[in-house]
Image (cartoon, rainbow, N blue to C red; front, side):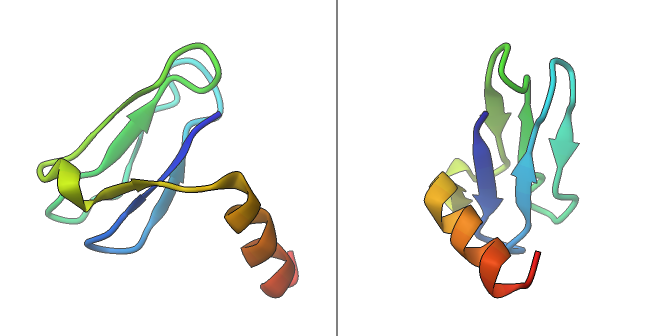
Length: 66
């Protein structure tokens, strides 16, 4: 499963299953789809997308008390 972050608004997006389309909603409209079946992602400005390291996500969840 791939997680992305929109650098314009900072929202983190993860698609957890096939056809689970997620979009940030800011003017960049970053999106991801496909879960573990396939990965489709994009944005108005793809240079404002970053793939998030899963280790970073786990570290942030621990810091946030999740």
